[in-house]
Amino acid sequence: MSLRELAVLGTASQVPTRARNHNGYLLRWDGEGFLFDPGDGTQRQLAHARLAASDITRLCLTHFHGDHCLGVPGVLQRLSLDRVRHPVDAYYPASGREFFARLRYASVYHETTELRETPVSSDGVIATGAFGTLTARRLDHLVESFGYRIEEPDGRRMLPDRLAAAGLRGAQISRLQTDGSVQLDGRTVTLAEVSERRPGQRFAFVMDTRLCDGVSALLDDADLAVVESTFLDADADLAAGYGHLTAGQAARAAAECGVRTLVLTHFSQRYDDPAAFGAEAARYFDGTVVVAADLDRVPVPRRR
Image (cartoon, rainbow, N blue to C red; front, side, top):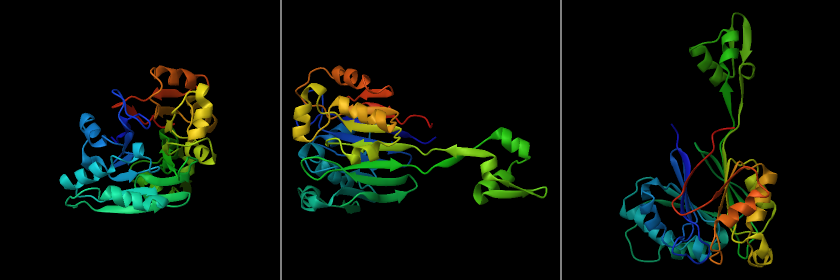
């Protein structure tokens, strides 16, 4: 059975605390491992989470503030140390090419893993594969920043009662799924007659940003959305000034966009009680709210 879950490696914004590491999120999606925004200490957090460097197939950076990228050198060097054989794709804002080069070669090491860089300069699809499509959308932060969205193509769910009524079985069903129609007893049976649309699953990753069109585009009908909530509504002015969201803003955006499970993270060290973020979000969002803690595992919800 396919595994789709989020492993939370760190949840602190800017300054790590005794309970919260810098950012880091590994989305396991079938045979892919998307590592988002690895901050300082990510390599050790992977060990605590019982995850391996070989689980990583793609690296996605939203921007080049340190709490979102200072873990890159250790992660990349670990890939080569462990002699990870598969290529790893790296996506990051094109304006930060120089920063990425410094991170990639921050110290001396023997590079053996193939790292394929894809600088991102505009909105749109940046990768496709068996997993579906990976899309980047520009966000509104103090520096250039992009959020990411993974979208599985829609499929079809076969309906046993309609298949039986049409008299289809075995190889006929396989041929129907491949060709879209089959001939049976002199009549044509189409796929649409015996199946229904199965929406593909969608994942969104929204880090440091104010509310903007990019946030809405990323969150649209997401089954699982990771959204920064650095501040609470009482500090909305601070959030706007520093280019961040509050828990209330994140929740309202998620509700408007039809998100199913909302994962709040990237908490400012000024707050002692993480439950306050969940309470604030619950006022606006009636789906599942997860106030992320380091080393949490959050499954992608079952298909709609």
